[in-house]
Amino acid sequence: MDISYTSEFDAKRYEAYIRRALGLKAVRVSYFSWCMAIFGGLSLYNHWVRHYDLGFFDCVFTVLAVYPLLMLFLRWIHAHQYMKTLRKMMCGVVTSHCRLTDEGYEVSCGAMSQKLPWKSLAAEYKFFDDDTLALLQVKGQPSIVLLDLTKHGIARNDLEAVLIQAGVRGCRVSVLRKIWTIVSGVVVSLLALFSLFAALVSLVMPCGHGQLIFRNDCEVPVVRASVSFGRNKFELDSVAPQEEKAESFFVGGDSTCRVVATLADGLVVSNSYGYYCYGMDCGVIRVTVTKDRRIKIVDKYCKYDPHYD
Image (cartoon, rainbow, N blue to C red; front, side, top):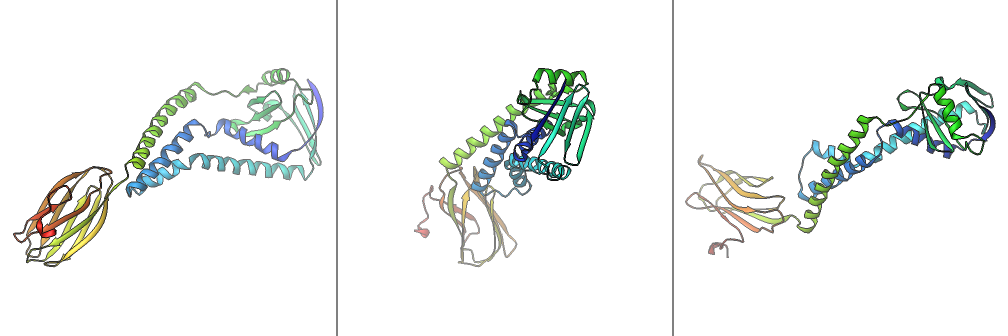
């Protein structure tokens, strides 16, 4: 092979192929990453609806949700740096003179001139189609992309034979990576479906809202009281005799109302009642420290004490 031609540099088109070449060996924006993004996004939605404060896990779900966009952004940065370096080498000239031989590749553009053997230019090659070839260095870094091969009279089969003869191998996906792609695809698909189901439940069955009214009918002040509904926990301080305090809450999952109160004389009283399901409107729940120093819990599913009517 000995073919010479002149080409016009199309920066926008060339950069697009550089991004594609970068994705051949790097962590790709694939089915796996999009499923992880769905899982992360829906998980964030579910935790937002249920008002769960997971801290570290919220950060993990956020990263998963933006994972494909992050990969695309990093690839764009890498390709942009590649093009910036290439433009400096070309010194503003857009016309290049190229020559392909059995030994290597020659190019001259303005003051820049290079002559490299195929083996030094690339370790692998990848044909995107019959007209486009990407030459990749070690670890998949693109060295050059040849465009419009057919237009310049270069047959794919002939060029491929020259590359193989020079010791440049075709870019292939390893068996281990194929297995990982299948396994990870199945796993993240299940995760995405699970999170989708949870999100649909959140839409169809929104969180149950309620109001807690804590009252002290005892002659002794309540120094501290703890009322919990699953992950919802209220800490009440200094509830004087005949005093009431109110708090709004919601049920983000199956839970029981649990109450622990410490009186000023050191007596600790407690009680638990009810099984509130996710999506259940709890209405008003009244928790009372009675005169005989017991905890009384009344909700809309029980008969109200006449005292509250």
